[in-house]
Image (cartoon, rainbow, N blue to C red; front, side):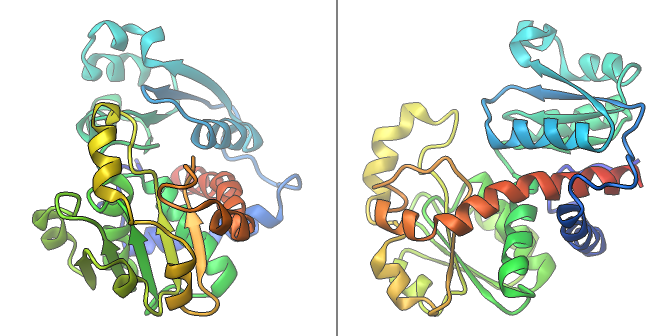
Length: 298
């Protein structure tokens, strides 16, 4: 049984397969000759709100021939305290796969272990594997191989996106620079587990110098709203803007996994100048997730 629980646990070979198949899947949209999910019903179990993740998975499952049901945590007994292990053992007898968006990484891993059905992490506080797979696919689509390139992430360096990029850099062999203020830099144990070429600094322009990709995400993730004032104050200046673009490579790509808060992690002018890439990146969630689903069922 295959799962996508984290980038850390995916092999380089499986990452390469998912990325390689996403292009043909995108090119053949609407003209698929096979439907690997025909006769299957998949559940989306979401404890966090979502736009791109929910829509891309619902559309993707249907386009691959499957049926999909959306289950908000408050709509089922999880919202009343039923252990994830019990929910998993019930659903594992009724559905063919699950896509889970929640807070704790252990919930996704426990669901996979107890349900014994394919399980996909659609975001936890620890990792966002589907997003970073899409980000790498988008880079490769526009600039070719990412190996030996420089990716700079500006903002929260201790987030699920930062950790996903850290593990991806180690797997695929590119340099990752993380520009984040003190207190929002990645945990040393994560860096030690991942290995790879990771540079952590509080120098935004130094990190952006000659970068091939500038990347950012929101300063306040879901579940961190109570910290918003402190986070916004500490991360002021950790922004993608004209100054960071100026020191990067002339053909630098700018990406944002959305939603974007203009004037905070990216200024409005820079966002609009690079909106084509950012919304290609958003669209590619559909194609990469169809590739993940196809790989799981292969």
